[in-house]
Image (cartoon, rainbow, N blue to C red; front, side, top):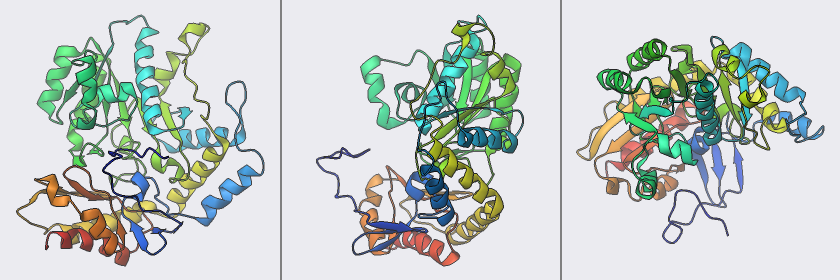
Length: 399
């Protein structure tokens, strides 16, 4: 029996069984559905994409996987080289893993060991944001502030090695003043906090964060697992403010297969590089650098570059703002839009009860959570298809 994610198995609705998928559509036995959330924000090119399929087929005919321990292969080498040339600044050193949660975990391990390798053993704390989500592993749960994981606090008590602050510059400055000599990193989802409620904040916070990290010698980590590849309306937020470590996932492979990357700059890499084996990064997922994943990721990046995806995202944002800016209802707390994301926050989560089933009747797959009704559509969506998604959201509040 399947144990499904984020659900009480006894009371959860029966999940929709998908028998086929193509473009932006999911197919059940009797319904054609627009995937309005891109399979947790990853399927930016749509399903069953011929070029993505071909990249996988060609690699499978050679080999599907070999470990990167003592071995290497061309797809991993090419993807690392592409990321090195494509990403901003000196984000040149890529460590592969098999999920976004693990990739953030690797980043946190890098940050801690970066200072340990230099004898600064007191830097054991992480600074992150309130309402933040960085993954489901234990360390990522500790540094995050997702209310679904507050059972960890009940089990282990108050956090000793993580501090969460709001996205306000005075709070940021106060935290650095208080904890700077104990911090190894500031970890953020830049500009857009995804699973934390699609919360959006200003670039000025990140610019000040970069200044304070430089001033106090703290590493800045951007978790762009969700925000990367255009979701904020920027290619990467790292193009605007340069972090020391960047984490990518989800859209990296276009949602075809689990894969992620933790990419460090020269400063971080050099703290591990040398003759002492104890200073090596001791981490190695079995499926890191999987050849199929690397091959399809290369094609994903190529499509993003060559098919003017940033123009597509700008169009999605413009249409969304035109259609959703005037949405008002006494039950709505806020309507937020940024790049390829729109979120309607309601005052009472009961307002959204039944929306998933309603959207289904309108030919849309949606998955609201808590107080948040949102869409993060595939970038290949047409205007008519996008309007179908947005109209379903708006019409719900006419009921």
